[in-house]
Amino acid sequence: MNQSLDDVLLSLGDVSIAVSGGVDSLTLATLASRRLGTGHVNIMHAVSPAVPREATERVEMLARQENWDLRLIDAGEFADPDYLRNPVNRCFFCKGNLYGAITARTTRQVLSGTNLDDLGEYRPGLEAANNFAVRHPFVEAEIGKAQVRRLAREAGLGALSEFPASPCLSSRIETAIAIEAPDIEAVHRIETFLAETLKPKTVRCRIRRSGIAIELDAESLPRARELPGMDMTIRDMLPGSRRNDAVSFEPYRNGSAFIGARS
Figure 1 (cartoon, rainbow, N blue to C red):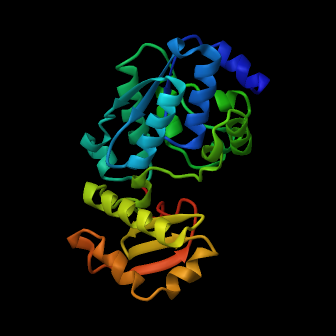
Figure 2: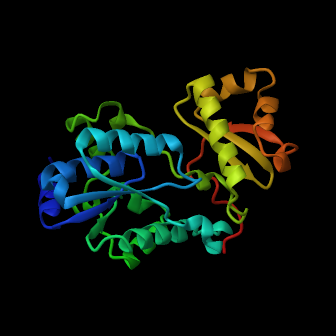
């Protein structure tokens, strides 16, 4: 355990940790529950169309192993018109709904798995976290992504320690295109198919005004382009309203859905 992180955790008392299913929040939940005791920690995991079922399965698996007090909740973002219209600060409304749902269920200090490296990116969700007095132990202990992964390995989390970043599925929809469940489901279906077919390091299915963009790492991109009929296979996985959209294969770019009108 990192000494600075240990000091932060011991200062918190009883806590409730928002766990998405990614390496950051899973590592924080593991370390906090082991250090503070499971009776002083509960885990909140939001289930919605934007959360891949695999993420929920990871959380449930680790909860069984670590004997967590796990609570699956509906954060309610899909009932929020501000979230659904998908402005550039969509994450503000997403996290606002999440932390609002958590604080309605507990009086404990709420924690997130945000790490120091996240502060260098556009993260409107951090503003929402601030509104609910959420604390970020990794940030307070000055721990970045590489250190989180090292802590995960030291904690015995195995393959989870190297799990690639995987933002929520709504992040694949270009800014100002409305968030709709059929689109989200198609994105997940396509990414799962490509992950199984190509075994890429990174894959994103983006829905844009210009069409469907499949973003892949440099090694996987040529293989996708060479496979006959791949664009038609992908088009067949789309909802009917998007079956005629153009399908392109492009290099992966972090955050490339944030290219629409800023509002």
